[in-house]
Amino acid sequence: MRAYVRKLLLNRRLRALDIKIAFDQKKLGKSAQLQIEEGASIASASISFQHLSVGASSYIRSGCEILSISKIGRFCSIGNGVILGLERHGHPLDWVSTHPFQHDADGRNFVPPARPARLEHDVWVGREAIIMEGVTIGTGAVIGARTIVTQDVPPYAIFAGTPGRVIRFRHPPEIIVGLLASRWWNLPRNYLSHAPMDKPADFLLHLNQRPPEAQAHYSGLRITRDHMTPLTTEKIPETA
Image (cartoon, rainbow, N blue to C red):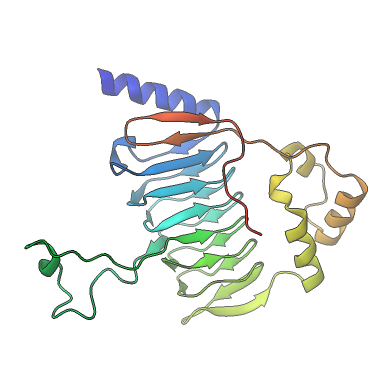
């Protein structure tokens, strides 16, 4: 009965913020924490992250593996079957063997030198791409389907191929600089809906001529295996 009430309460809070989560809250690790802003959605996925923040309106489609990753910014689009934060150092290379039997017994401890992956804002990741742990994907970048990403990707780059490489950039350098400086993902949705989003140069001009009255303040939830608490102010960390 208690589990049913907990699930009912969670679903009610999720609906109020237009947040969709397809996995069971109880599948989170004992110390794991999900911080998710309004309008975001996570379809059926395999999860083993420790601390993950997901920004407003970002979505993760079904079949994904959400592993060693700490941030998915606002307005990100993650396709089906993507692996986010695949481990690089899950087995010891300088021991006698790479097999985990060595550190499953006799008190031996293997701690891999891991650093979570990060996706900044407005990142589009194509179907079945693999993002390795420790990688940072810059704002506005596009990752091609089935691309393996083993290095940082600069903002607004289109990154694809095997091995993955920068194919080109989405915009000229001056537009990229302007969009990054604008931090448009922090602006209210009603302001953005009336801006010329289909014309980046005109958008930047519009922003200069008609600046918004205030920044957006997205609500959200902090979810652990046993608890959930509201987020009432911006909690998704920004980059310099």
